[in-house]
Image 1 (tube, rainbow, N blue to C red):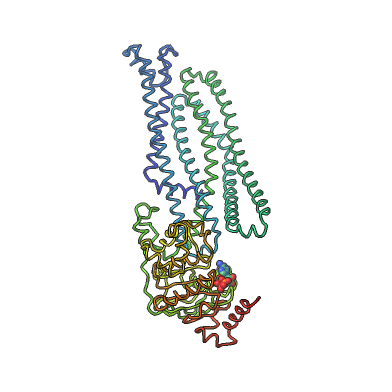
Image 2 (image 1 turned 30 degrees about the vertical axis):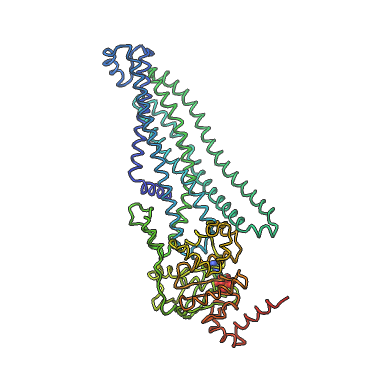
Amino acid sequence: MTHLRLYMTKLYGVNGGALFLNIGCMIIVSLLESVGIYMLVPMLAAIGVFGGHSEMPFLSDGFDYFLPHIPKSWLLPGMLLLFVALLTGQALLQRYQSILSSRIQQRFMRSLRIDVYTSFMKAQWAFYLRQRKSDFSHVMTTELARVSQGTNLLLQLVTAVMFTLIQIALAFWLSPSLTGLVFVSGLVLFVVFRRSIRNAKQLGDRTTELSQVYFAGITDHMNGMKDIKSNLLEAANIRWFRSLTQRMEDNTTQFVRQNATTQFFHRIAAAIFVVSVLFVSLQWLHVTPEKLIVLILIFSRLWPRFALIQASLEYIMSMVSAFESVTKVQRECEAFSDPSLIGLTSSETHVPFDLSEHQLASVSVRQPLSLHNGIECTRLDYCYEGAVEPALRQINLFIPARGMTAIVGKSGAGKSTMVDVLMGFLRPTSGQIQIDGHVLDDELLPLWRQSFGYVSQDPFLFHATVRENLKLADKDATEQQLWEALHFAAADHFVSRLPEGLDTVIGDRGIRLSGGERQRLVLARAILHHPPVLILDEATSALDGEHEAAIQAALERMKGQMTLIVIAHRLSTIRHADQIVVLDQGEIIQQGNYRQLVEEERGAFSQLLSYQSTVSAAP
Ligand SMILES: Nc1ncnc2c1ncn2[C@@H]1O[C@H](COP(=O)(O)OP(=O)(O)OP(=O)(O)O)[C@@H](O)[C@H]1O
């Protein structure tokens, strides 16, 4: 119920007055429909079915007053014309109301999509370490689609309820006792089937769970296709997929079976009910034939609405689960909101979900810090959530501006964690980082985030052209600047050989390029906006000797202009670093330049070097 209330509040928050306008239109459409039904009586009277006289309320007086004044030959055409005019008016209004309903639904969905997507974007990196990425795709696609369907049904439900209430009022006016009877029967049916609404919610929860597993599974399998193929896991995966889709099929069938059963009982009840109405009206209540015609017309239209209300409620309850999972993810994201993206909070805008272009531009324009002295880490600790041992402990380190600092160590030593903490993606558990003497806090973080370029071990490229991928870093970069950056990253030769040069579309995540080519493109992108700090996390691991030497030479040239922080497994690449920091189990165990560290023969660095030379000398 809390989620249903939240949902309604949001629906109203986004659409405001349009919701009331929609309800107003629904009331008028329902009223016009009732008048249409009611007009059948004078029409039938005009044909002479009731002998030219009617006992219907209002109409009897009307007939007595108007009929003598209207020429008989005009009566039927006049009535028919009025009937057509009425139905045309109703159809026009209904058209308007359908469009309005759709706009309400679309506007609400857009708002919800933007809210959820914005909260994903605003979440801190630490949040993504805890979550399966497929859960986000699942929420953004399947769950939001279910909420959209639910919203449509909700609006239909409101229409059905409006129609029902107005028709009941009309029926009550014609025959209170008969209407009372029908109303009580409707309520009894509703109470009898209340359980099925509760069941629908449970089935909806299970649908959410199953589709989450489905989504996570196919995402993992697509990402790990090479491993699946190389380990002959195809058959096992097909078996898993069959079993899961079987459960999904059973769940949906169970829901539809329940819904169909409810509908079945409603239909049986409708048949019994029409017969009973006829019997009770004629035998005991002595209802006149014209009233009976109108009442049967009303009730025969009303009863399917009862059934529709019941069916819609079941569907809506199953959709509430989807809304629940959307709001859950959104709340979790908000709990991990990144303070450096505070500009994306749009509560002060007129339309809360709609960030203006200006706001978006203001948070995406880079205004980097210029680093003068350096970055100082003092007694820095970092422990991952749920981990027993800290990944970084008591790190005291000064990274001088415009120099090259290399971080090395065995696998799992804490190098990537160190870089993530330096970038402000992970907040230290204790200790602090100072940038030119200023503590890296929530206030400084937005500026700091604009001040570095980063190339990861697993560089990311979008399914777009080379040009579009590069321009993500600087949308105003000129052709010359693009080629300069490519040249710096030793990528100009291979890009110029691509079929359409800069305008060649590279595949999904750059899959059509080799690992080394991807790394070089991402490096070109990172330096395009001339960041004061450039962080390379194993950024040259996939390069061959020739290209690595080209990048080394370029980095050499950059020394003195920007601060370089490099994580490298291949120790030959950091020969010219100003300082090398050796990490082991999250601690700094050695520090100095290449020559100093090599001279410490029993030191960790010399050991790392000897492992590497043994490996590279092995036959
Ligand atoms: N998301 C995480 N949750 C929990 N522990 C983590 C997480 N990421 C890393 N760790 C742990 O933190 C420690 C340091 O990991 P980190 O990735 O920083 O090492 P690394 O030196 O970069 O290793 P590699 O050279 O293999 O990339 C490791 O023990 C690792 O298991």
